[in-house]
Image (cartoon, rainbow, N blue to C red; front, side):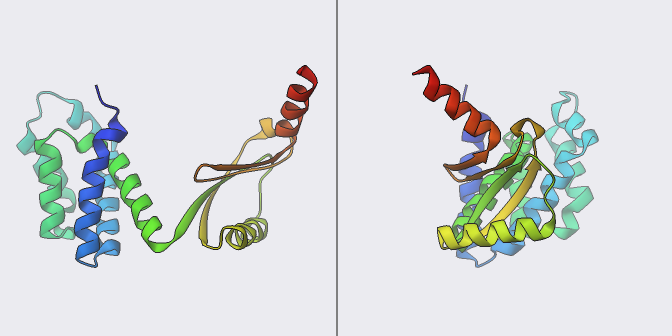
Length: 178
């Protein structure tokens, strides 16, 4: 069986292609956010997994909540997802679409993991340094992980910058073991 991310990719790529050709990336980003918001609701999740809820009922539920905020193409997209029993993939479809959109816009996404809480000024300074390093706009999400002991770990794409005390201790332990 294929991984859900693999199954979601063609849907995300198709929506991205449609949106890009129509110069409607922001509108599609909003539509996917609205659909994802409805699908994320626990009651809708229960309906998605309930074999007693028909495809027509599920489609009516989703479109009944947000159908007036969707374009005809976005409504058709919901219908395709429901017909193919793929509505549960919506979070992954949206994430992949956003990734394609950021790539087109030249924006990198960074994940900053800090041992301590960071204030806005620290985050802005770190993002500015990352933008200078990568020569691209960077958007960042920040997490706190006290197991790092101190410092910051930054993940940008497949690059990891580990400036944590935990990382240095692990590297020292590996060096001593050899």
